[in-house]
Image 1: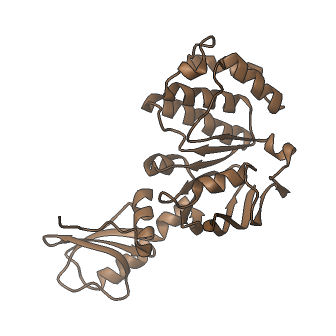
Image 2 (image 1 turned 90 degrees about the vertical axis):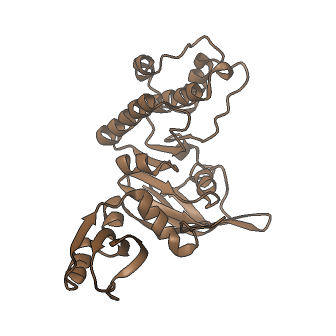
Image 3 (image 1 turned 90 degrees about the horizontal axis):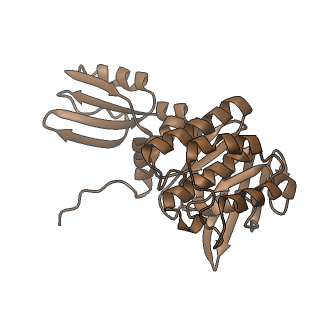
Length: 295
């Protein structure tokens, strides 16, 4: 289990993280989302023990991460921007990872050649961005980590390779209880793989829930009715095209339907709410709503 408690971090007077608390259960796939500048990458550097907290704590299974080699050997991170030394080959990097991670699995590394098809003799700096990202996954998965941290993991990968890699990772989650934290702006893909979600805003955790409860706590309804919207509905978004109104409201679908049915609507359809819509309308309350601007 990853636990972050009351974590704060400042750089030259700017507060990048502000009393942030987060919990990632063992064996969960946790999606970390937030607008640019929310502090996601700073949080990840604390999770990996790169930054020392100004205050608060970051622990894995009750053990602090910072300057704790034993804990770090159970964790692998694939950052958004990947750096390799000039002249490195895949063999060089394999030997480096074997020296760092005691659980590095040579047999798995060899089997994964059938997935990645990368030239082991070619200098890695000559690979494309997508090929370098593939190599990062190849090495990370071969380490058999207990915790895998991914920052914008699918950037640069084609759709087939994205699906292949995520399939392998989810197999590890199911079979070995691997804990995965994914920071991404691709909310559609997060929705397919995550069971927990945390939404960050200005260095703090705005909300943190299981994906199912997050989606159940907000409802999207299309309706046609003559009466005005009932005041009992906690509406966070309202739009209309002709007679058809679309509303996003807090609360469960059953309760929203009960309130609206009392107004005898002509049409009342409850629609599924995507993670992207939840993200937009949750942040809409803190000045991130999509605005109509006339130019």
